Image (cartoon, rainbow, N blue to C red; front, side, top):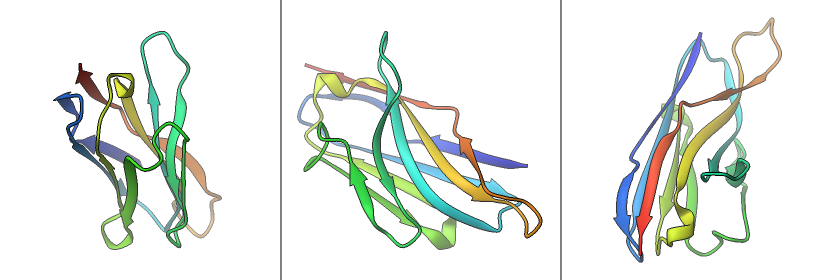
Length: 121
């Protein structure tokens, strides 16, 4: 079994910073892309940022220049540093990873349980 466990959410004032982390555990052969998504109340889940196994990154326009995604392949962990937070960043943040468990299986997407981020104005 594979688990993704997020941590680091919370309440922050606008302009502040928060850091999220997500650790994958279980039977893991390789982890390909990892990503952070978010879902605000009443809205669809959206991609915030993604990072390949080689370190190439991609960001939603709304977070470019404010958020930074990174990963530690040795720890099977992905991070999201969020600076200059805005009230519109308020959402549940989910990590996602494309994981291959064994040589005999193909990779598939796994999701964390989500962590709440609330930004007050």
